[in-house]
Length: 77
Length: 536
Image (cartoon, rainbow over all chains, first blue to last red; front, side):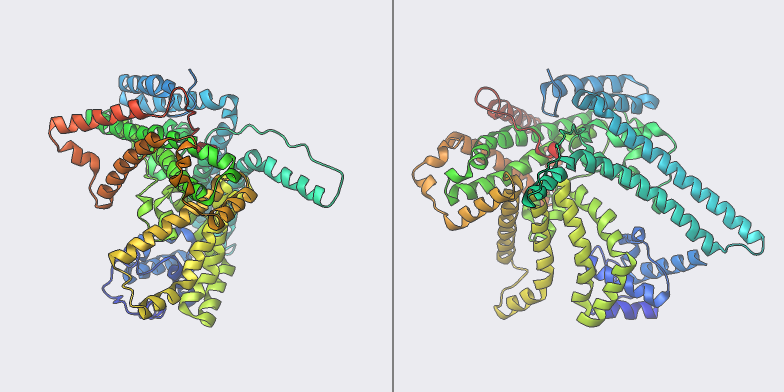
């Protein structure tokens, strides 16, 4: 999770990712920052995020993104 | 009495009431069959034997979906067996093997549906361009350009077919085993001609449920239908007189008239399309079916990108879900994003891959609207505006800071709204012009020869519309504007109306009906405008 927060802070600084729950709905992350985020997550966690998973509910908070990573890792094994 | 649009007397006075009566008389279980039967009859009335293309699409996605599901079941079975036995392919390898197979089926079905659309809509355009190329190369040969008969609504239902098969592949929805349910999703008559482009997940249950027609739904749906008729019959059809003259003979007019033509065409397009959507959504409402909204007060947008999130919403979200993200998520694109971030930073890095995906979206968007270079230009124009805005955003923020312009102020917001509307009008001018060359000519004329002479000498009121026509249009536009402001403030105008006393409620409703009857542009001297988006 710490690694994910680091990535998020690198891509879009100045947000309290521990508490923020409207990253997409609050337009904190847009489609371009999502592209950067997906590329970084895939590199860092060795997972592949298919386009179908790019939904607001999966990216609205750091916790949700972490859940997504865990689900993808689980599917991979 | 031909039934060729949602505004025809045959549709409004005969077909729709008849469907409502038969639907009500049928038991809940069989109501979906009434909707399917009436949808096929509606399609047949407009496109006749071309129904074969629609049926081919339905059959293709039905069996394609089942095939993908069977491959999924087979995969699970083999994974289960692999877990019990030693050796052989691993779980991961099996997943990859079956994913490839499923992807091949999905691509085949999607290509079949898109291919039909391309073949029927773009063959004359491609062949015409080949002929031009041959002529330019001085090769004495020419292809005979066939006259293609295009089934109504193919641009809309083809995208629905693609979204269904891709959603099944992605596991968003299970494959539908009942071909009739799929058929109803593909050809539900209110949305057949001009959309909205629906998703199977959001429509299937609603269409199949056979909800009883409630009096409230009937009233609310009818209110919306009358409002849509006002937009179309009072504004769009009336403006047609002026617009036809200007766009048929643009060389005859000065830049002021051309600019007026651009503004009025944008107004006409909005009234025509959003008016039809009111009729479509209102009809759906009568049957208790909530179709997705296609407009959200687009002329309150502060940027072109925002405009396209409010105009033809279902097309925009379709392109985002099935082109923008899938293209952006391709492996080379992801590498490009990472490379970009490392070399040009967090902001411009993702713009490289995002820009490529955006280019694909706008090329497809332009082509979807029609087979002509002006449509491709229309797509590229919006791509340039949206991508350019992204590139210059940091510079614009700095300039505003230096000039002490408060970017969140109402005044600055208003400037942005006007600027966006002006850019939209220019784009629509190219869209409506008879070819790219004519569009460019009109644009040059508008910029270099702009005068108010036609207003001063009164000639503006002799181009198909007199002062009375302009006044009627202004009143109708004002009604739509007030309605939009209420919606922008999250007030549902029909809910507001429902809470008023009987005299106000009935007064306003009957007032609107009378306004349409008295001031609708039909009868001698008027040529009704064919629904513009039906042609796409």
